Length: 581
Ligand code: GCB
Image (cartoon, rainbow, N blue to C red):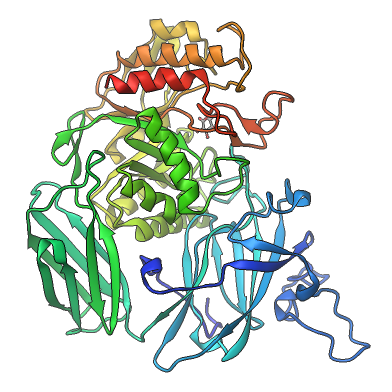
């Protein structure tokens, strides 16, 4: 980023508690198929691109774009569902808007962008202030020097073209919704501010609360106050020479759990600002083949879900969107959700936390990643760090997942073991997992044999008996999982078109899916150490890979709910099974 006056700065957490100024709303957009707003005709980046927001100064001036005359769309939001002509579009779109700002002394202005899919360049008043890769995690830029008193122009170039070295890569089974899909905010902080903090319960001693905080500057002796009024915590603390605070408190707190999602109001006061949060206290660990929440074994009655709106599709990004999907999961009897296959928005994680829903959160290291490419690895690491930094304090997240269905091999093992170690270095208080595959299934013996077993706390795998394999095999199956760790079936399922009925042997009927669920659930009873399942999937979701006319129509139909919220027969099978667990 050198050369910018502005700079990408480490992510601040809990951005919504810092009185942000929203830049959401209507933004003008220009679809730029050949990126002529960025590259000249020799494909060299040019200094007079669209980000200059140029206007003719005299009648003879040649300027071949005009943001103010271009159409608008709502930000945050994907372009695919807001402009019918962009439904399948993958490429570059420019977004721009004017906004008013009043500069203040002693205040630094951070531009926080919740997510842009996939590759973004950010410009303020004609200058590039930052860039980011990865479609599902936030980043922030200190734009103090580029901000003007009065009118400002912000412009974001968003490019969602797929490529072999990206994370995710060229192929993936969900819609590649493009654009600025999460909030754009301005956050005003002092010269010295709280970058992030962590509060959690000890995993062994349930009366110990750990607190850690980091300022943006390495300064010793700064006063920070931590208040948790309901627990009579009111601590005045001082930073060490790294600008950090660490403190352990002995308190007997009411523990957070799916049955009792107790959250404590927490206040962190520093430098004239108070950051308020709601924090749940719980412990999570494994012992042998069990997962222990607050010291007690728990069975994870789960469901997988994509970040897609309940009705009509499109990227979800609000508490209301999340509430609806979580309410469906609750109706099923779930206490756990797999947020597939990338970090979901902060509203969803927080709403799940309020509702007592445990969460598996994942980065899109999916299928055939470019395992030997260093940039690809660093990109995955970066997405992992941004996910963990944003959600470190969300007690409902119990598992960080680093990958899904990746092919065995040395290069992949090196990549994933490094990534797992990195995850542990960022957060050793949670469980690490990844969705593996069954390595061989001859003679009805399913063997799990993955070198990554040493790098995960929970063994998870996807299996599709009844869909990609004959359903009649289910009763004959045996399972060999030679690891003393809990086991989660991170996916199973099959497609059905809501309202299409027939024989249980006929694919796409609700009866076929219903029978598949019955056979699979019966089969799971034989899996030693089974600690949870997340069937695939809560709701039908859009995918470009699902083209069968009249049945799929670009939807993966493995949902228990249709894309219009109708329940399929398999819903009731799973609900019954969960009610007995
Ligand atoms: C999988 C993938 C998931 C797909 C699903 C399917 O194993 O992890 O992303 O959507 O199978 O429907 O085939």
